[in-house]
Length: 447
Ligand SMILES: *Cc1c(COP(=O)(O)O)cnc(C)c1O
Image (cartoon, rainbow, N blue to C red; front, top):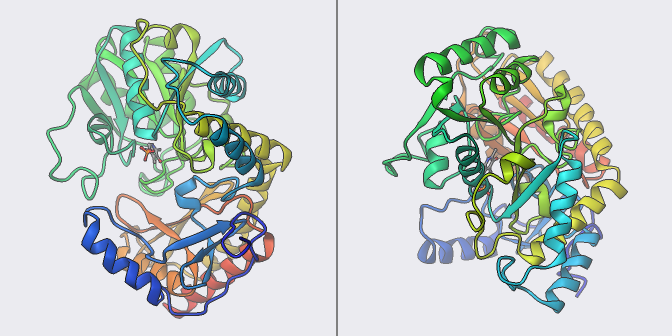
């Protein structure tokens, strides 16, 4: 058992025994190509057999350092003990009843926890779903039901998912939208605060610019909701200038517009706060969570003001699997782990280490145009030296070199020129240091 068991007891080391991907992974990749739609891509085709702490072990026996957490999902680490224990207990008890048929305590317990832990001390309610996109769609449904209005505003560089409505909310065409229209109607786009690319516009001014677009092109009288990621994920880890989010919230409050924070990527300790909104004391009307919520089991949620959440008619929200008992058990294990392991603080200390080390690289390398993010959600935006011209080729080259050396890194950004780092908060210091050493060397070698 021990050689296939994952979790934090796996040897915490980078170990390369073949090229990456190795021969067994290549065999599986050939089978994948024959069996799986080519539209489903893979970033690093080293096929996993175990993962935990800060490593992922592949079928060839290589142990890779994980700076991706499966896109900010395995925040507490893969197969975290409290998650495993609770899920094992639940899977042996019952796997599904459908909460809408025969409910169970786990769902209620997760809702209570979300109501308690999300920003704001007003009365709240939650509803559980499966994916981030599904939860975003439901947040829009709830906002429309509550306001009796239809329009929704999203922002430049936004990512909210791949379903029809969330494709419409998402900004980037390739690969998310191209050829998949027509898209849902009544979705409008406003300019984001993006300090590196808007000349360092201050937050309140950037908000004024966005609000002007909203007022002139949509009209508050038609607008049900504004949907925004407090730190953008796929769009490039764009951190809006201070004051941008608070000004938007204030305008929404004054205009009967529901402010929806999409914290699918930034939530659950990732940014060094339990939720990224907390950094500026922003209290969203609705907050959408998923990814890090359940350690990899599919679960998402909409949490918010009781009067908004209770607006839709009875039976108006739901789904066969929403709040599945295994996923709820996992979520309770995740929350317990975040608290008992002090992972909010851990995210802050990981962030400090990454910013210090990458800042030192940036000081001697003008290709690192911008270094940004908070906690364990950090990115560098790569550009042609002395300009803001994106360098997607360099970004791909650095990522490929990292992958070959057993370091899982992800890219993102509207211009494909952002390297992002999302380590599991269970990563030990020595692996984080080794990962940053490797990155430093790769930047040196690509000069
Ligand atoms: C990943 C993501 C989504 C979509 O979540 P899925 O579970 O993939 O549907 C929505 N919003 C943000 C900010 C995300 O990062």
